[in-house]
Length: 179
Image (tube, rainbow, N blue to C red; front, top):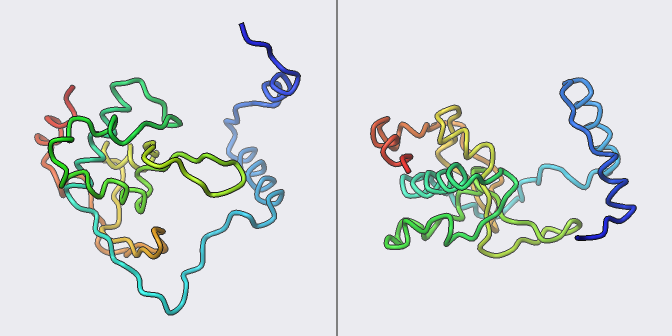
């Protein structure tokens, strides 16, 4: 049995679930003020060449298998898994999974952070995001193109937007989502 420290007890006492939108906004504003500008939208650098990345059927296929892994393994949205575990059914098709990490440009997956104070990620470990789940469940559309520089998506083209049904028919999608 592990020992519980005073700091862990204090942390548990400070946790609470917020259901009221106004209270949530107030807490969020306080956090933004407390961080004093540490979190902001990165400015698009001038004079650099951007690469236009396209949301492709291969990327969407990888997202579907990532979604299946979370759905059927009782994974939480806060869990991270190795790429090889998320896509183990697609290992025979390396051309499909080659650019899996590009899904982060559309905020469909996220890399596993390893430091609370610096931007450092654990190589090869990913989690699904709410956007990834909503896209697979046909709740949202995503921009087809992302403008990327230095492995960061600075912008997305607002036209065209795509839905998952632009890549797969409802019948194909249902077949892919079966266990």
